[in-house]
Length: 279
Image (cartoon, rainbow, N blue to C red; front, side):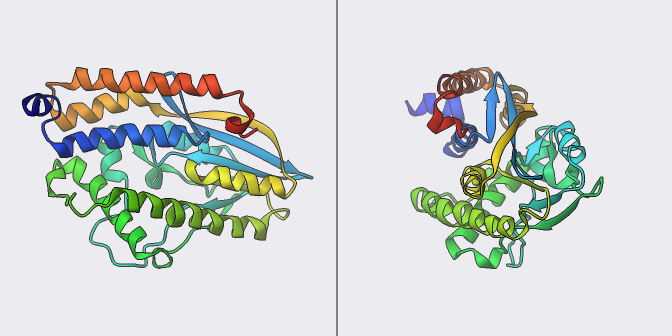
């Protein structure tokens, strides 16, 4: 069994890379602000209106095709963007960037190509500072960006996995990094709603909470669209080919494609259910 494990995955840390990729797709596509249709990952855009003002919620993807960022940069006019960006006011020994990983898989990073400052738009950062997060959240972000930094360098073996308490970190991430920052975002929406047309391009896990809150303010959904972010199979093939250098790539891709198909069909099955459609 141990020999088979080494043949298939090489090491526990390489297996971890695959598990995180699969978990990321499952987690994101369960939010209904990022959807997997066929083999493509899409952002979901929902426009809510009250009177003559709108709030647009867009589930953004931090790594995607350059054309995706061009589209969302040019899509809106005369609006106020409420941006997601944790201000790094705490010293960290790892860069908080997706640039290296995006180039590694032949995609683009949001930080490099998304530009909301066009066509009469304005923007403010509607997020927390790093120092406002708790210590476990700061450590979690450091671990995440260390992982992102080491993968393109082929140095994942340098990451200390023994110090990761996965369950504790996930519980804290939900409470502090996701829910806490979503509450901060809503504070800005309360401040500006009714005065400006708002565009909220945030990570998909924050937006179901925000959607519920703006509906309580009397906003009604008037439009829903999908924006293609990237082809999942192409991305995965590029990642695994570079990371493993061949060998067992086809076996791993076959497993991931099967999981992707199940995720995609699960969404089609449940899409009309009121509690999951977030209508």
